[in-house]
Length: 167
Image 1: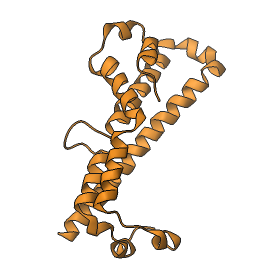
Image 2: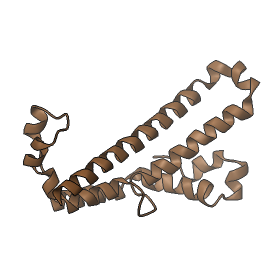
Image 3: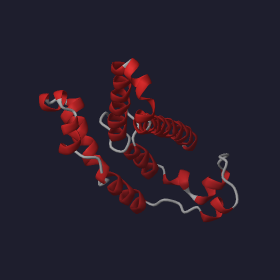
Image 4: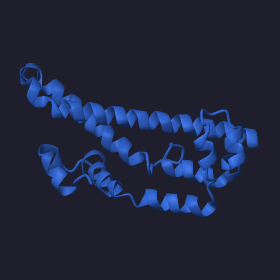
């Protein structure tokens, strides 16, 4: 039982790392391109539709993945909530003893300061994730433009930022 849970933990950890790295990469690329647009006007004017499509694709990925990472939609999809559910169901995996035995690259002060999660801390963390201010704005963006494609935002996407601003 413990080996199966440990194996599942490693899979969840890898999935979490992959999702966060993808989201960070998309956000950094979007921010860089958006901030440097004025520096490369000649290049952008050579293929404006291409560059606009790239920015829209990055923004779409950012909104959809940014919303699904903390809360998610489908039961089999990786989310922070599903990770916290796993932690709550397998608290013994996160005890100080298990932490010290695990062959992860944690040494010294990290092992000494490790605090094992409890049912209550997991419950509090899940509530924090559900109450993130960004969840509502990302959900609004996703619903109004990507999920249901309201015509008013399709032709004037800048109105979307006013209707559902990022926070």
